[in-house]
Image (cartoon, rainbow, N blue to C red; front, side, top):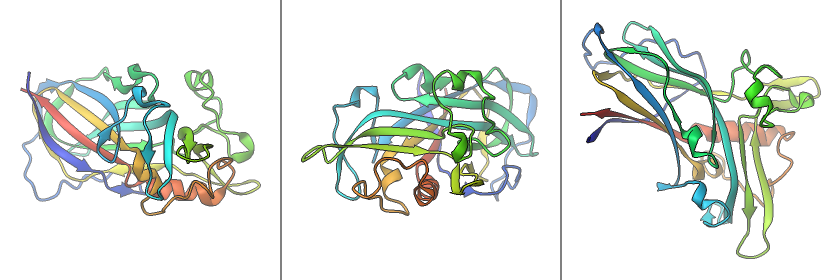
Length: 261
């Protein structure tokens, strides 16, 4: 069955809540409660447009914007509060949270147990957990996979773990690109999550696949050029590094809505 790409969204970073119901100038038909559709949530990863899978672990050499040649041995990241928001501002939660593990393809697909009326929708989601959701020990499944963030650094959970080696063409060195709550000073913490919300409404009238894609290369170049020779390991307690990761995250994620015909 052919899949037609309705929209490629370069998601807009929004630091406020995802409650805006501005639908732009494009007219969208009123939601019809008699028509329902299912949404499948998928996650993919790429490096500068080239797909990245678990088959690339420890094999494929990537060159970052700073010129370092690097490999990936692990990539895990957390997306939460994934919602479709209709033209009336009504929210349809697709996932409370999802831990995506590049090494486990089963985590790349999620079928929300919800039927959604046909109509105009926008997509919003959070990279990481917001401050209210980021509670230490709250999620048993995350506790069992060692996803916890140290209490002395603010507690709660990781937002991302990206590990591997760099300078693999000369003298390989490890990097641990881990992101979470930023500790400004002992006892003072800065929530480091990012809310993505695009105000453009998309008309949908059948089952859809909603894909959230991560361009891994963007973590290392925009707006902050990353030098792994200067910041490679022990970044969890590095306040500046944590804030730079948050700033770079705004160019990392895009989304695509596919409709079965």
